[in-house]
Length: 261
Image (cartoon, rainbow, N blue to C red; front, side, top):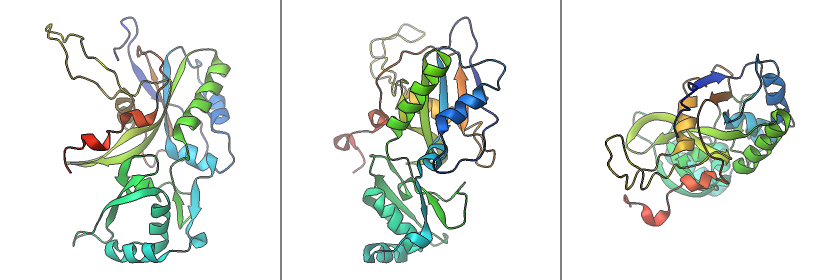
């Protein structure tokens, strides 16, 4: 999506957000934080929200002392040197385990899983970082698209303008080192910008170009959304975009298009 010709793109953190716990109202917290800014949300603003803020508010947290590992979890835990209870939580979040691997230089291996929502990621996105307590795990929201839509609706009502919402998580990538933020929940924001038939700067017709707009937003948000910074909401202002009834699943490649099986 292009930047508006009469306004530069600005990207900034939403300050004044406290820690979150189950039962907290994420939308209300954002509205109250925005009301402390010099200017309210504006037409076309897009908010990228770290999923852990949503997960905590919705109670998508698991205390390991409440988990009993199954025999499948115990056996798999031996392969990757993980806590069997954590493996049990990973299994509960997964459609299937794609690969279990532990390299000799690793203390703890990794389980590449297909999450219930269709994402292929490490440990089915079950994570310990930014948990409030020791031996507590955070899982993805049950329905990130629904969560994004509900927050978006509340924000649009509060500020009387068109708003977009992306819920993000941090994933690794096949064939590349490191992690980046990706979109796991969408409201209004296009998942993909289809540019088939458009022309590039030299007049050449575009035949396959389809930028993953929502993932680009999520990835850019990671520059301001540090693990230790407690900045779970990033605001993008100045982009031109058209609202769509989009879903994060629009970004998942169909299994029959997998070229690496």
